[in-house]
Amino acid sequence: MKNKIYTRSVTIRDNDMNRWGITFEVREVDPCTKRNIDTLEEFVEHFEVSVCAEGCGSWGQCYGRITPRTPGQKDLLDFWNKYHCGSIASGTRAQEKYLHGEQYKKDFDEFIKIFSGYDENFRKQFDATSFNIMCKFYQVQPEHMPTLRGVISRYADGNPIEYILGLNPKRIRHDANDLYVKYIFLAIRGLYIDKGYKYGTDWLYLPIPEDICKRIDDLCEVLQKEEEDLSQSFAVPGDFDMSGNFEATKDIVEKVMEMRDCDEEEAKRFVALGIHLQLTFGDLDDTFQSNGDCLYQANGMEYYIGTEEELEQLASDIVHNNDEYEYFWREAVAAQNTIDSLEDWLDSIISIDGWCSVLNHWDGEYESYKIAGEYICVCRS
Image (cartoon, rainbow, N blue to C red; front, side, top):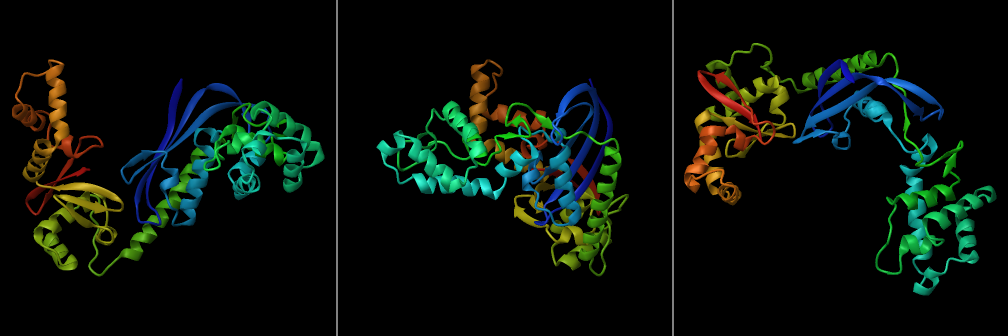
């Protein structure tokens, strides 16, 4: 059983001025026994936290695509890393720190450098001399050598050189992402068994703190304040806010034409997107641009913006000029799902499913806004 007890969303702009919608959820779950990543002791968890992002044509775990611009955004990524799905890990703090740090990469690269000069015959023979060379180079402590020998014997068939390098001098057989390679280097550094825990034998978790909802609230308040400060920095003379019950009059359109030095068509589409995203003029003006064929971009996202007639014609052109749709028609005919001709079937896509189903690959939906007496539609690309 999962019962959602808290949700909150916030919108940020990262260092690349990409717009991200961040959604937090806290759910109550059936009590389950887990193992603490810090103490390695068992505990009973009653909650789980989910953090998801939407932006730049992506949705979900976009953690690695957000380039933090502010201290609050750095805290966001830290929170995300710590609490999403209980910060699940297969190693202790020390084991994970080593494997995700520069030292592991350096150790692996040095191994390649040391033993890549071995020819095929030497690579096949991992004897006491080779073991001693490896231990001396990495300064393996005597108390860690029995564990290292055991890992090599069990997971590398007694020969880490052949396991990692293989017999082909032109390519590596197993890289640093390989699980058994990780075992070998953890053992070299005396970390394969840390505080009695053998790497990869269990899932380790970070307990969800009791005040998790307050922590999210506090974080969101910081993020919102940073966004307000950014908007203030973009403010220009004559700036105006298109959020709330904003009325897009003819005067507003003319004002945008003057401020952006653009024609009426672009000004209307600018205002429509501003209302859609609830932005100020300065916010949107910083990244708004036309990519042609009713396609516009702002804060790392693309949108189709235009009258319903324009967007319907654009969708029709795409359907009739894309060979992929002819393939779909042939599949439908073969499955006896249609007896229509190709042209009639293509026409039916627009008439039945609507133009937005073709243009919007996200959710097939759009919004329409009255801009100076004319309705302008906005949808994701």
